[in-house]
Image (cartoon, rainbow, N blue to C red; front, side, top):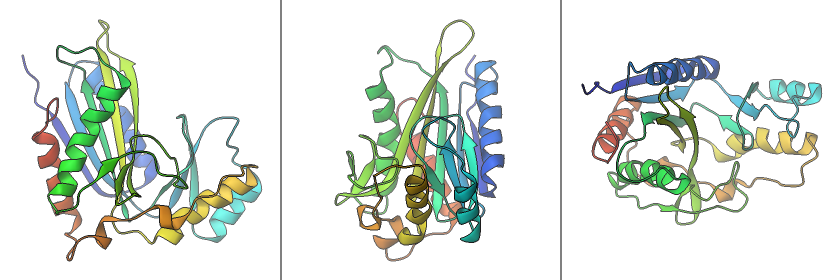
Length: 236
């Protein structure tokens, strides 16, 4: 029996709340109640998400400096690098059981994620390209870029379902209308206090609002994302 996909939309959510909702959805897919789901959310407030690892420490001075500039901090058991969550960002989590004739690979997983995201930008007449972006935060080979500037960061994780099937958690962070200097500031503070030499540059990034004449409201943006994922293979 084919199970109906689930779509969850959170127009303004605390970061911890959104992560909890994501974890609940993963459990539903692992337990067989869902074959796939799409979680769309925008952060309420400003939170720097820190990977829970020895490389990134939630130092008291870091917490203090972030708080003084209006940023919270949250550690999460993920890899990668610090990610700023801001009201000007839309987050996407696509959770699904891997189906099809091809064996799962990291490349295929990222291509499956980037395809509907590219379609979303194309709906605004904005072409994007997937590649790494020097001096961007949490850089990766499957960033989506507009004219060489990062507009989407991506990540994925694979888990197992009972019976051995693979479950893919594919995530994207779309910069919609954030002040880029404000967005990257906590990342550089974190890098400095954790003894990292890398510095993020605002000009390495862009946001959707810079490339459209009239940015739609959140419900419309969510609906365009839902339509884009619905039009693609292994999607809603």
